[in-house]
Image (tube, rainbow over all chains, first blue to last red; front, side):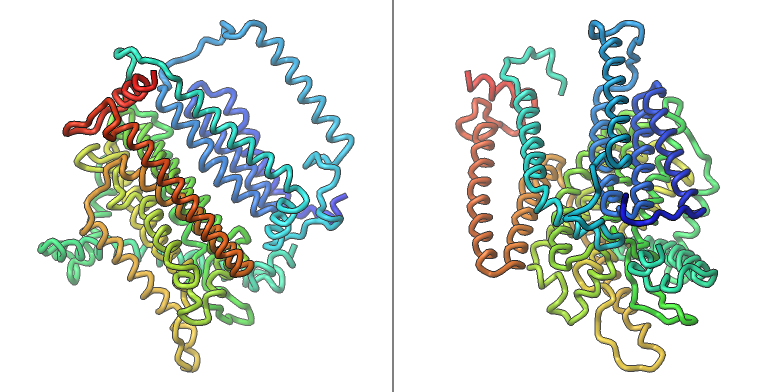
Length: 192
Length: 410
């Protein structure tokens, strides 16, 4: 389906096992660890595992971007917020902040799993795309695939790319608008 | 698989036999040893140079000109008691120093320090690795080293280190954007991410160096941003002694503190080498036709250029006072990021054809005028004549600014 015959050699199996272990242990850590900073660290571990998997698939650019954007910026911001709020507060798990959130969570999980199974059955099981080619040619490996990726994004998928960019800008503007609420603050509330 | 590897490094042209594995191991060990040796010398060099600039003598007791002082200090640090504070998060506290050291080591692996050697029929590149992601590895690693600083400060369970780690995360993320933009300029001009190709593209003489070819602006932005990324003076607000005791490593002692210290100097050397690679053609330079020794000259050129920049860092530290934190943020967000972004547009335009280049210059100038107007407007609202809040003597606290702006609008 990929256009190349996959060879399973011992090194590739070892690399896959390592990355899978990193991803799974990290993912389980994110939801089980009580301390939010430790959970964020687990998340970084998962992201690194995914980056290793990307490198094993010769998607070097994606691996680098995975680390730079997700580990280098997004989780740093998570930690930033966690540090500001403090990690001493422990949330009680017996009281639901939202009414009926458990039911909704179960429904959400069911929809996600059903979606994944449909994707696996109907298209390429890794990417979810119907095919992973650009203009009918499969992506080459090595340093050339950065160029192919760039060409694909800025020609075939230009609209999707620009739409995503606009969406992110809208999100930033929205966040700024929400954060800049016009109100007269109570002097006691100001925490400088 | 082998075609993929050999497209990256000619060493893998005949698969991966034992000899190749051995060569790689030797490269890694030599690289590690050289970096460690360079760190010892760098610490001595910095102390000695700063002493000269401040009319002091500096280290002089141990070895010729006090060169072994670093070794003595290292030994002392190893033998000291290793303390973990009561309030510390023990696991993260112990993890953090390694999160700083390991990225510093890995970044050095992509620096080309010479040309290509023929050893026993194998073509060996004089750089530890040449991954297809190339220079992005440096950005990724500097992203990881943020965690080391941040988590060290947080896990200490103490107020000043926490402030320092908050500063560190904000500072390093802000300057990473400008850093990335200048690297985009270089990658645009080179057409490849690999450091080997970046150096290759600059090999045709001094006019082909990115320093000149791309205009001086990316170089200036890069050197400022990388200094901020290193947390070195004048951007050392993270460990500002006069404000935060010692910053994120206040609570660290013994070899854990030593690792932070080591990483800082390792990063200084590596980033000097990265500047040389990206802007000064790396090992490019005049090579006389001496038989069997031609491969030595590129290495000498590389070392000479790197030492020049290492000296520049020492010079910055001796000559420049520390930035105030808000000045640092203003510089990063309001000056460097717009400047580097505009320069990417201009360079991209000129790469297509000159007409596009001049159009982009016009666009960037227009954007610059608008941006200056916006900053002026913001300044007047916050602190100018029209502001309700006239600053007398001191800068207003954030709460006061908020009150003043909201009152004014009602």
